[in-house]
Length: 273
Image (cartoon, rainbow, N blue to C red; front, side, top):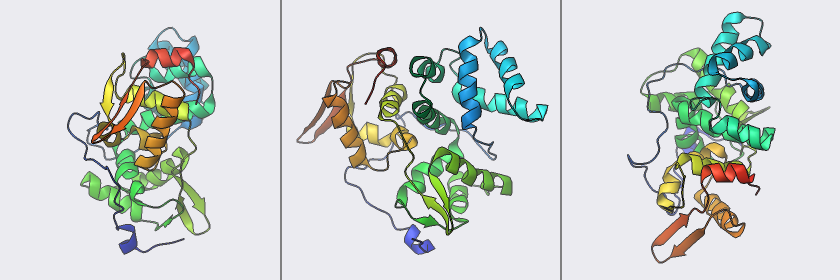
C-alpha cells in the first residue's frame, strides 16, 4: 500500500514507551555529512581473514589485497570502513569473537547490522525515528526518508548520501524494492544475535538487573530487527524460559530483567534461541 505525507507523519503510540536518557548507551554522537556503502559480504570476508591475522596491520593488508574491487583507492576505503564498524575492539573484539564461535553468516550479519548502526548516525536515526513510525509493508515516497533524515541531522543530505541511505537500508534489510517503490519490511534476524546485542549494549560482564524502560530506550533491539516493544517483551520471556536470562519480572509497577551470563559466557556457551 502507499500513503501520503500526512499519513506518514501520524504517530503510533505504544504503551510503556520511554524517552532515552543521557545514561543510555547512545548511537555515535558525531557530526556526519556523508555515508559510505554498507558492505555485508566484504565484512564476512573480513571476519574470516581476522581469524588468521596476528595484528591489525596484517589484517588490514590482507583484507585490502583480498577484496574484489579493481580500484586500490576503493579497497583501501572499504578496509577503513570495515575496521571502524566492526574492529574498534581489535581482532578479538565482539564481532570477530562471534564469528569465531558460531561461524553462522545469518547470525553474524544480524550482529554486524547492530554494530554498524551504533556508529552510523544518519542511518541509525532513520531506523529509530523515521522507519519505526511506519507500518510494515508500507511503500515509502521516494524522497520521504532522505527529507526526514535531513531534518534529524539538521542539514541537507547531498545526492550521494541520499542514494546511499536508501541503498544501505535495503542491504541492511529494512527496505525492499517493489514495483511501487521501496517497501518497509522487517529484517530477517537471529534471536541469538538479539540476546548477544543486549549483553553487548549494556556491557554485561556479571549478573545485573535492568529496567525494561532502559532496554526499550536503547535502540539495540530495533537495530537487530524488532519493530515493537511487545515483540521485545516476547523475546525476553522466551530467553528467560530458555534459561538464558535469570528473570523477567512484571509486577505492579516493576518490569525488569536480570541477566545470568556475561557476554563472554554467552559467546562461549554458543547460545541458541
